Image 1: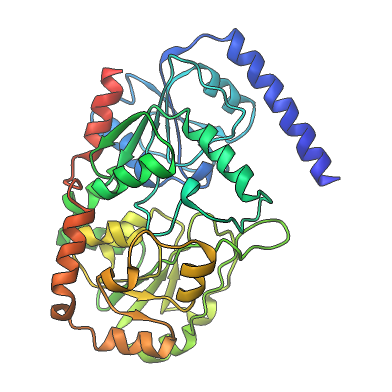
Image 2: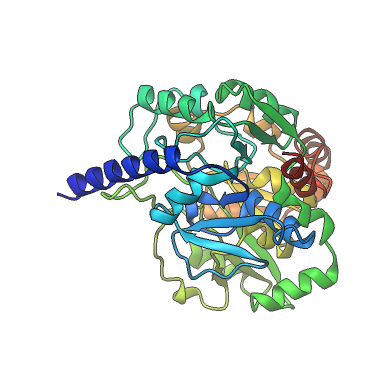
Length: 389
């Protein structure tokens, strides 16, 4: 019954959008934004918009944001609209410029005069889109459907942001992208260059009510394609012994746990009060206030390396992820700019015994390859493009 209702709702939405698409003309001053398909206010889209606010352009343009939860508060003069509702369809039909970091529903036909800026959401380690050999996702698509839908979607993109030359080459191929590549670095990383100072970091720690007398570990793993519940919602289930971490690290460290945006688990962290903090806020701010990043195969590694701070990799399922789920674009074990551990005990040793000099050359090579364009001006380059369009 739920599937039938959902199907009817989708058909109604498609019909309404097609009517609006034909009836309503494009309005040149309307720009629509969405991050993580409406889940939060974050990433490249956020920092492009905030650059517009800083320049006073939120008064020149009607900036419309789509959210699942419309109670969110934004800076500047933004119009907030419920995602996938009637007003959403209306603004999609009339907006001159689309700024998104994920694929949008396939029925949203784009007019020729609309400019679609796809920011994407990370440099890839794991294989993407047309480069994938199989899918294990909760939406039920098989690999042929997945690739066909992906290719149709990317054909609507006019501009795509690239963080580095590696991404340019990879995106061209795996997305079959034939549009304009914006080789400008990621707008979300401007903050890591422009606000990496003691006062800004202290203000953020105060904002999130974090202690000033302890070091901060950020744990930010990716999602697992094959770990989802019966509703297709992805789970957070790392094989990490948080009790052991707390017992051994709580005197010197606190830990921020940040889920991937696709993960919607509700986990009770109260057992670790005073040691583990969980935030749904923008991860860029978490980068800035942390002393160490622990991740796995996530694109967080490429952003965090802007800061040149220690990175450790907890990869309990390395063989499975590499050989069965996704596969990698490069030799991760050889190139990772920090120690790789498969057990909590080994991770503890790596934290306590970390020596930066052991990874200095590898880290420098990693930074040079993946961060050549993250110079603090990426957001402004996109705003200039919007103005020119």
